[in-house]
Length: 438
Ligand code: GLY
Image 1: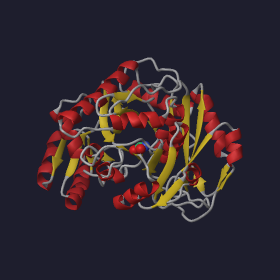
Image 2: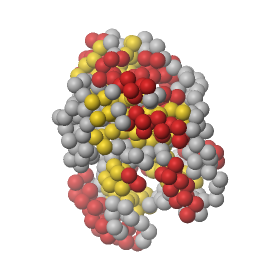
Image 3: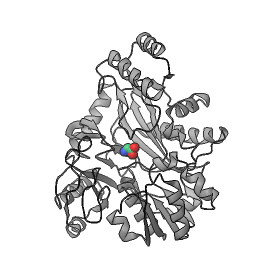
Image 4: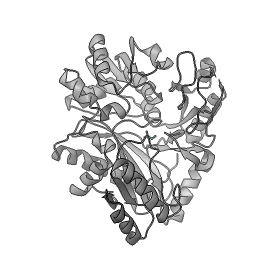
């Protein structure tokens, strides 16, 4: 089957690989030529992923029978609606359904209206003085969020990016002046984790849990990025996420899918729940309407069921089972020095692909062109897969040494110490649990 993949990052390289492994004939449209995808694809169109008309033209030119949308920005533009109106079924939610990610007011209101478990207290303000007085009365630390897509960079939390609720008021005022509205939520303390499911609008097929490292530097310091790496465990849980927490988080995602159906905005594709594990259980922080990047690279190499079959099940509403190998994974991203604030661009890097393969690691290309020139965002990911987290981390680490250039990465992604730090934090918060092995 001829399949069009939209997007050219590391996530999409992993999706493209899994589609080809599952028997697809691959075509790609993205704004740069990803060297990994270029090798897998029978045809490659260069266009902005949000230029829906151009993507449609390529889809028609390539004669594809199915499309798979990688990033969120084209979903916000209604790419699925346009492709489907033109007879091309697509994996991904419609513009309305993608509001789960693209409009935080929609997401929070849906949770409230349908009493979806795992929700947190929130308010939306368009009036500065109302916002100021509510935060003043609330007293406890808050989170300030822009309403729309921000590439993960606009959310600010009291105690982290904001000193106190006074700074939160000032930032929220700035957002009201810029966007007309702002979302204020109560702060939940705990450890974040990622739960992705495939859904055809009715069923939810869970994928292994993963943990992302959003900060740029070691020990969770520095600016927030798209994610500098991530790990997953052979149990498909995480060391600090118990089976009971897992079931609760899955219930949140299943209830969301059901609510979307009742709401008249049925949701199909990949639903990504970003959860905060509080001492009382998982709380939904945000939905994403697509695979995580890097988290797609944790789960897709483990997928035993062909992704093409899963994709067909999603668009035909006949989703069956999807099985994942019981292995641990560690993804480490290499990003240009200075990323995310002031990244080096336009310089070449050297990648010894053979040595990376010999080290037993997988390699995914992202923001880098066919001449191996850095384009400014996360450039290359290496993935270790093994029986234990320690082995997987060792494999990823040894592969990193075979990429040379003006790049940096986080040594601590998936290390024992960084996992222990998260277990310790949960214990300090008063969670009573026996850590799962990983
Ligand atoms: N890694 C976070 C995301 O994909 O949104």
